Image (tube, rainbow, N blue to C red; front, side):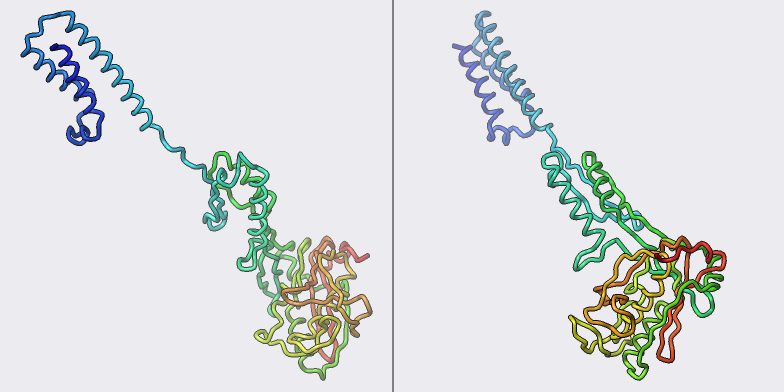
Length: 363
């Protein structure tokens, strides 16, 4: 009878140690401590009843040992569950190598890396393209070259080098780093103008090509527009391998920059517009550089026939739209020089005397 009572008390203590009520009332006391306390209490009760049967005591001890082992196993299982830590996500930062700023942080796994690699690659390619070329609201990393010029005192007016974000390389670098994460720098290619500072003083020595067009100087607005655009490209240095962009060099042909209303060709008709006449400058330049070995990147004809150059020899431009672009593939740097006045516009191509014999001519 005493053993049954002691076992009952032990089971009751164990049950209370695992219940919410017991946890609150017993505080932070461990399970094992609570069990021992219960056993001591039970033992005291047993002693008051004079436990005199050894067999029954051994049976009680055996059952107590079994219950203690069960409690320890449950305790170990609970500890293992608590020790399981949440896996940290692998993050990848894309960094601007110039400013050292983080451009974007990727979570490759969330984007499909390892589960849908084709989709992941397509997303990275799209992002790289937008980053390089820009969007309707954000300018891209790619920048056209703004060529250097020579001022009236023979000093260099610095432009800007060409900057290209290598999209394919960026995509590959991001994919390769996606497994481990970390930082990836933008692969930006910067190309300076292809001439030497010592060339500047002699680039105007030799005339290698020239072309002249005529206009009615009595048409004030158009005359002014030709003059302003011709001045913008005067004394521009086109280094070997450089890319020339008429729109980039001249800039906006709007009222804010002094351009005036004049006739211009739009959709096959002559209409009044700000900046009309600048296409005569671009067409004159085209006929000049066409005599040397340049490669055309972009060139467009007017929608109507113009009278200042033969049919098919024009190059229409519109800031923010059609452009006249070429690359200097002559093998040497050259200088663009413009001569404006008396109803004529002449554009010359000049280079140093020691380059004249090796400059490649147009085909």
